[in-house]
Length: 197
Image (tube, rainbow, N blue to C red):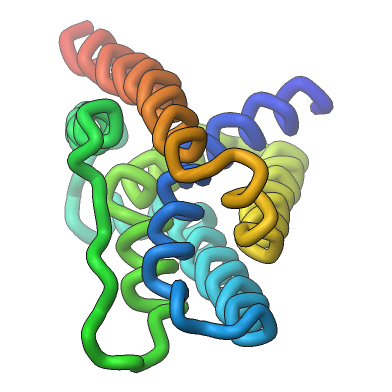
C-alpha cells in the first residue's frame, strides 16, 4: 500500500504541473499583498481538492453515464495530457494577467490551470482503475497529500521565486513537462494495448 501511495502521489502531483501553476499564480497575483496571495493559495487548494475528489471517486459513474469504455478514455486522456506536456516543454503554456481584479483563485488558477483537461482525464482513469475500498482510501490520501503540497508551494511562492528566479521556474516547468509526457504516453499506450487486445 505504501508503494501505491507514493506512486499515485507522484503521478497526481506531476499532472498538476506545479511549477507552471506557481508561475501562473505569481503572474496573476503580482499586484496582491502577501496576505492576499496566501488567502488565494488556500482557496486554490480547497477548489482543487474538491474538484479532484469528485472526479476521482465518481469517474466510473461518468463513464457509465456516457457509455465510454475506460480504455477509450485512457487513449483520449493520454493524448490531451501529452499535448499539454508538449506545450509546457515548448514554453507556450503562459498566462497573461487579467485586467479586472476579480477573484482568480477558482477560475482560472484552480480550473483550468491546475485541473485542466489532461488532469481531469488522468484522475478519471486512475479512479476507475482501483477496485478495492482500501486502494481507494490510499489513493484519496495520496490525492489530498498532493493537493496539500501544491497548496504549500503556492503559499510560499514568493520565496520560491526569489530562490529560483523566473528562469529557474521556467526550467522546472519544462522538466515537469517531460515527466508529464511520459505519464501521458504510458496512459495512452495502456489504453491502446487493451483496446486492441
